Length: 296
Image (tube, rainbow, N blue to C red; front, top):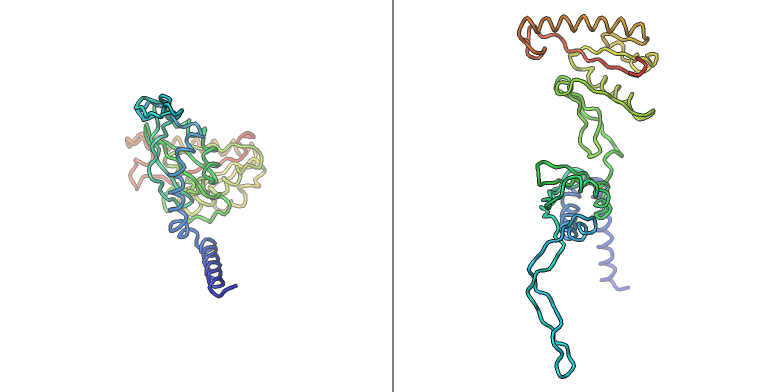
């Protein structure tokens, strides 16, 4: 083996090792500098074939030059003619340039006539397999537009802890399947119901809510009909805790009286809720957490 060939092989091996280390130890910069440009070119180049294979194209009439057989000359050779006529062609939806995201990329699509976002949602799994990504999510910001958000790898494999929220009654309890934070805002949506099968994570969500709300200036009230096994560890922070049906009845009566007093305060001051009260009259918000609602 010549020295020049050894040198070339050594350079290639060093470059491959460097790329592997770059991707392994600092994937965000590797993705933005190298992975995203290659991906964007691949997605745009393959969009016609992918859209056709996923059933997202439409037949449209277009004027085009077509090749048709002509007369046979005396030598037996068939003369070919080109005719300008209307033909049916498969038209793909218009795609903008993909934009990089933290876990992949997103792209805006102009839907064709008769298409709805559900058509793209039905083809999401086929799109993910065609592009070799983990998943494709579909959203529609306005009529005639569909946004395809692709995640290159599963963002839930490793979930980093989130910092405590600085806004009142807002808690980050986990991460969504898109990789974004899962935020529960009790001021925007005051009532939530957490339902699911056994071992689906209902109690984990309740624990995350308690831990997220504990540092905030709110009163926490718990109903735990699992014998207190879920909320008892937080009893030093809870304002009240009921673990039996009898205790639940008494605690509900106390909350009803407190709610009546607050409604009277709002009525006398002309406020529709406690957030419209002056700061010196506004009572402490109360968050009621119920575990095993079916038993209640």
